[in-house]
Length: 388
Image (tube, rainbow, N blue to C red):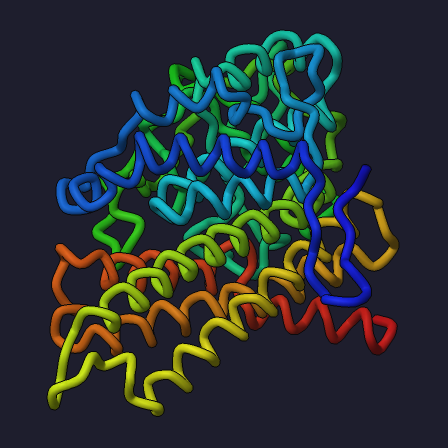
């Protein structure tokens, strides 16, 4: 039984299994992530031990097939999980999303031998994975990437660099897009690169506005040797593989925004119920009540939009790509705005680290950039409308 929108209320009703999945993720996040999130952020600590604890829960291969240890769940199920984890820490949830995107690409496009070789350790979270597409000179124009892979005997030799890679230096496997042919999307191929591959190195951990618990480094290839059997699918298939991964990745990052925004609203509701000004609790002022009402309305609209987009991807609807782009644009914009408004409602206290609001604002801001900027989402949406 799939989730559905109730015609009378407009409420997106989850089935019993989906509610159980949601509750499992919430319980783990509440117990193991939320109490540590501010400390991880402050120390810029990558909590590999806690990340690995998600493996036995089935979160290392959420939509990977079960013959290699995956959970074989749908995209709506995944959205529920990432939303629940992000309520505790959007940066933590986002890394789990990235790992799952890399694992699912191997599951979907890898040979049976590749799936059996890589996926059991990824689904168990014994190995962590990162996704390597963006380069220093090509952000939104992914088809212009320059990292090159040249066949040499039984290996490919990679040269180039990837930029803004979450988990770089900490992850065990890297799903890498590199050029094996001519310029343009048809010349791109995909490789699975082990952390110990000769010629692979990492840049310094970037100093970032948010996502402090995640390492973000360059991934550098200097005559990096990768076994030919680590090529996914075939030469020239890489751009399609990368784009296929992004539809789901866009929904996931939107879910991370949704969970973070819900956390921000919850904090604002609690704070405004306690804080007094001019002899009254500040939630008794009508102007503030109107703001809270708008925040709740926008958050619920974003939630239903995201769940509907995820359902389309599960059904392989012809317009699922457009809906993924629309949901990513809408939900990440709404999520950041709600977190920013929650900070304003906290006044000066919202600017302090201990209240957790400024962290949410910092963490959610990058969601409007990654997995394709929201400007690129508008390009994708417009092209589907005008037939380009």
